[in-house]
Image (cartoon, rainbow, N blue to C red; front, side, top):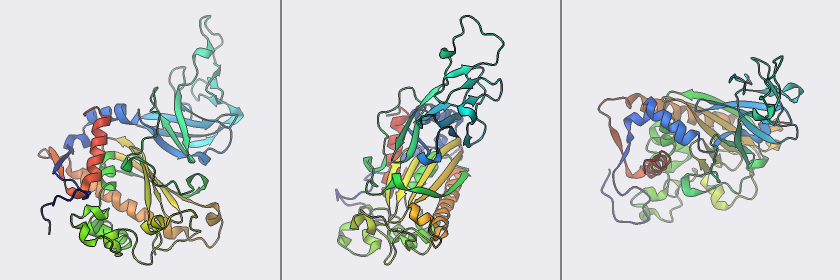
Length: 388
């Protein structure tokens, strides 16, 4: 039974009832347009793993808030990013999601203007060119690109932030994991009928866990109590020092990782601390586009991209050591199916949440004490939107 809070300053939860974002923030096209301009076109956005572009001429296209991005490796192997737009009359350049460019050239499919892999205009298809036309004045529109631990981020702003901005906890909690050395063993992708913020809010709380994630809540017993941290319980001091995972957090007794049977199904990562092994998972969170979950035997990258005011594309990549992927006895499905189940459950819950937000009576909701990470997300959002 819920009760009023005490004055414990180490209690992690909210001390006051805070309003959520206004209902229209989740479906209003005008709000969504401002989000694209203020957030998605200004922040570093995760696109893919570095090894997804293997060698000169390899390319991928992705869409960030209506902007098509062309990511490629030039003839020297350097990663480059451009708007997927011809400088002639704005045609799309590359039509496929990924591939390899022939003859180390980017050729517009409309009027055949061609560019080198550094984005310089090489030739037009016209019989003549005006005396004041200079090809060097028409390179492709460049986009800032950065590689970090084997992950590729781009920023559409002409003045990108200096740092990749981690949200939860203000830093990377996966330093001891060999992220850069791992390979993608499986990719899952789905478009969910919800606003992108709804999915992030769901990620940032566990009030929903017992009824939405029964399997995960059995694996991580503290989730059955609808909390993420031991200090989310106002009476946490009563259980301080408890070895019971429902009070201290971490995996249920005998489990090692997030999988269907709780067992690790490949080599365990070396260099992890005892607390990291016992916790079951650690996170790197980079709002608005990605979170990375680290387990004792694999890592999982979940990318979030908006596809409209009420549509969000979720992509998950499972990363393993090469030795595990090359082992015929490796049980990939035991891990992937469990993670997919959790994401599917999150997607369904987020869609249900979205369906109720259009009520003309719903001006705003209210956050409960356990939803302090949601409150942190809302503060980040308001700051990014220039709302103070």
